[in-house]
Image 1 (cartoon, rainbow, N blue to C red):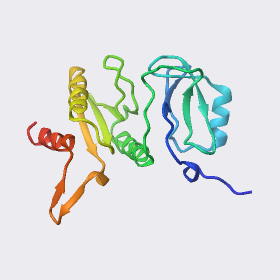
Image 2 (tube, rainbow, N blue to C red):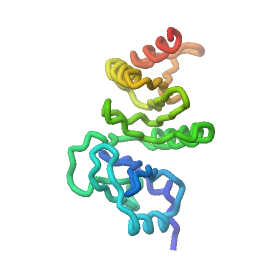
Image 3 (tube, one colour):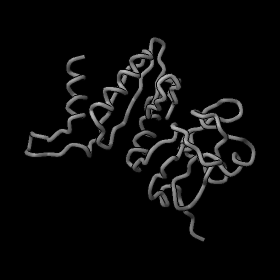
Length: 192
């Protein structure tokens, strides 16, 4: 019998999928952790999981065609669910989470901020302030970036945008074409 690894069956992220939920004790559980299918099957039988945003119960989906995720038990209009994310974006978040967790123990992935109804890709809590890390692989509007930045700052959270390398569109040897939001991110960095 052929063994299917977790990465071999990931095709597309599912709209409304959650990769982080809380258990009955209020502890965040990340589905991206490198545990076996048997581990998650056992967890699913032993624990209940809840959406960070709407507090409704979610179920653990461990299918063979889509990436493992939590999903609302019933149809939901919860705004906390993630949108379509590419595999590149999901893996990038996981790598960034592991990197920051190594230095900052209070690092979480998809941490829900109820005051602003936002869920940064990575949230780091330092002794002095929070940091919201957004790993941006797709194009967003400059207005959306400004809105997110202002909301983070209102909570004394420093926004940090990491633009995926595949975003750079080379025109010449030393010249790149930037989208408006990419220019804004660079402009903010140079003028902060």
